[in-house]
Each structure stands twice: as C-alpha cells, then as structure tokens.
Amino acid sequence: MSSIPRREGTTDDGLRAALEGRRRVPGLPVLLLSQYVEPLYAHELLADGAGGVGYILKDRVFDGGQFVDTIRRVADGGTAMDPHVVSQLLTGKDRDTHLGSLTPREREVLEWLAQDRSNAGIAEGLFITEKAVAKHIGNIFTKLDLQPSDSDNRRVLAVLAHLDH
Image (cartoon, rainbow, N blue to C red):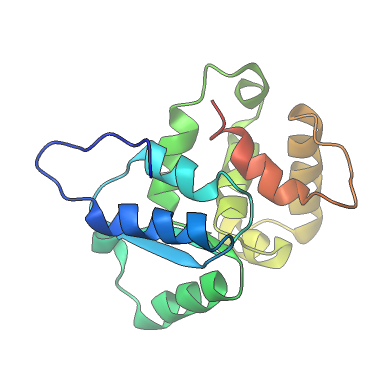
C-alpha cells in the first residue's frame, strides 16, 4: 500500500485505491481529481514511468471538451498534469542543481511536457515556434543529462527528474 501520509481533515481513500489498483495492474490508467496539490501523490503516480496517469485539480475543470480530451489522453497511456500541480512541483525542486540550471522558459516548456503536449501544442500555448520548442527541449535534456535511448522516453524522464527527490 502507499507510503503517503494522510493529510489532516481530508480523505484519500480514492487515491489509495487507485494506487493499489495500479500496483496490482501496472499501467492501469488513473486520472486523479483532487482539491489540493500533494507532490507525494504526483510522485507516486508517476514513479513507474508507465504513463496513463493524470493529476487535475477539481476547481480548474471548466471546459468539458478539454476534460474529455484529458480522459482520453490518460486512457490512451498519456500523461495529463494540471499546470498548477506542475508549477508546485517545479517550485519545490529549485534546490536541485540540474533543475536549478533551467531557464524560466525551459521550466515553462517542462510544465507543458508534463501535460503530455506535443511540440506543436507547446508552441501554440507559449506563442513561440516549434523550432524554439525543440531547442528548449534539447536544452532540458542536456541540462538533465538525459541521453538518447531506444528504451527510454526522455520527455517522460525529464518530467520525472524533478519528482525523484
């Protein structure tokens, strides 16, 4: 069972059940709808690197179409992280040497990577070119020392790098 401590005044039975289900069935798609940001939950959900996970804040689900897209992305094995969750995770990791070397724009790109966005989607969201996105992603990989590999997805590893501390 999960090693996550209970937060006073909250119930996390749903999360614990989801984590147990994912432990029993590796890769089981899980979309967490939460009222608060809990970095340990995000870490535990993403720790196996299998994909098919999402962490969305309930009060930020305003667009039904976007929410359905998120559900589909997670069901198809993708990752969907609320921008506020990603921001909280990145802010808490500034002391890490590698992550501390990222520029503010590279951190923004990393946030969009955590939302499982394509280069085109990141470019559109940040109002920059796809070429600029590719350059920033390359810089992130270099700064996090993520070498090309046939067996690893560097985009996922980049997102997990800041959760692994």
